[in-house]
Image 1 (tube, rainbow, N blue to C red):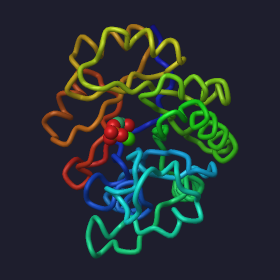
Image 2 (image 1 turned 90 degrees about the vertical axis):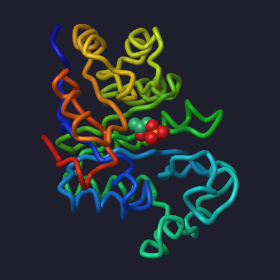
Image 3 (image 1 turned 45 degrees about the vertical axis):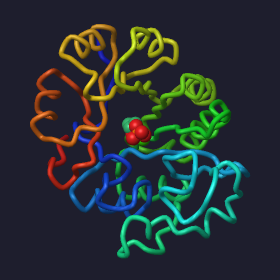
Image 4 (image 1 turned 135 degrees about the vertical axis):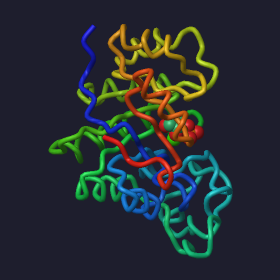
Length: 248
Ligand code: G3P
Ligand code: CA
């Protein structure tokens, strides 16, 4: 079966630059680019007042000096938080970026985006819709469309409804459950996006035989990445931007 277009490199920087800089900040994305990476993955969710921003966790506590749920706070408050000091003194004062500012940076620097829709609990559909509409508006002239991914089937269905032309990948945890192919088909995914430990050569072949590309996270050893590429994995998402050289 013919595979869909895959304009993404073989390596994608996880949360900007993995653990080398505060995750999901512009500083992290810039650091990944300084290591030669031309594609990055990051996590997007909504503030209480519907501003799209980058953060992995439901709560602010781990990666900022804020407390409680991201979705319980308006952007005016979130924009004042320090999202760098938790990582190291060198990044103190780094802010939570808006998704819009990250898209501007990536578009201006030709950095391909893997936008993980990471909804706060109960906000799957609205986050999927908001991310897809934003991407459609801000990336209409981009050479490489943003790849929208999510563990949330509902968020991906909403993204499909809002901007069906944007490529989608369905994320899955380890172990990969039996319904992965059905879910990928349901959301019209171009790719299976699996935990690398849950992949095998047979799963990669089954995905490809069903017209799906294969991406995986978060592979941080070059020997493992080489094995995955030998199996035909299309993109490996990695924290190790300093040890795994960018590969087209
Ligand atoms: O998008 C791949 C990967 O980032 C998914 O897991 O928990 O790091 O967001 P997580
Ligand atoms: Ca992620």
